Image (spheres, helix red, strand yellow):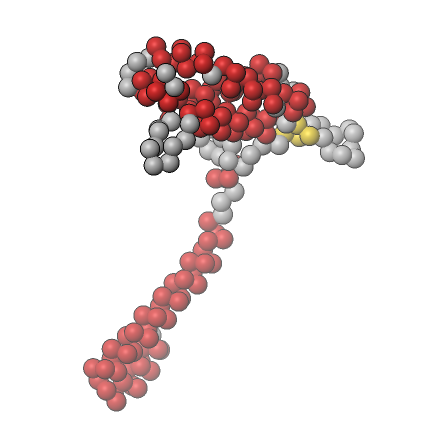
Length: 176
């Protein structure tokens, strides 16, 4: 059976197909773990850490893969992309860098802005950076533009209804 057929069988409830898929794709996970093992050493990660992350991504790929006849993508390609992304994301969140010129400084953890913060359920760094006051200025400008357009439309309607007597009404409306 092909990977695509095995995944479909698994997704249809035949859970024994997962074991077959795992055995059949063991080298795929090891390939990506090996590919990034040099970087992992710099990030204080072991080869087995990358393999573990690869298997997590592989299982996620098995759950989410959907074969499309119009745009066919092989399962191995899809799983490879997910494995690569997961390993790179793990490396990105694990790499520690020191300030170049200051040898006495402590290590600084570099992480993604979309990473979930420790001690929270699902809050990201990006969510803490939002500034609602900065949006207020744009909302005020947008409201002013809307009001100006509404005022022009109102004057046009009044002019159409009242004709020449609109000058007095316009002056009264502008004052309010």
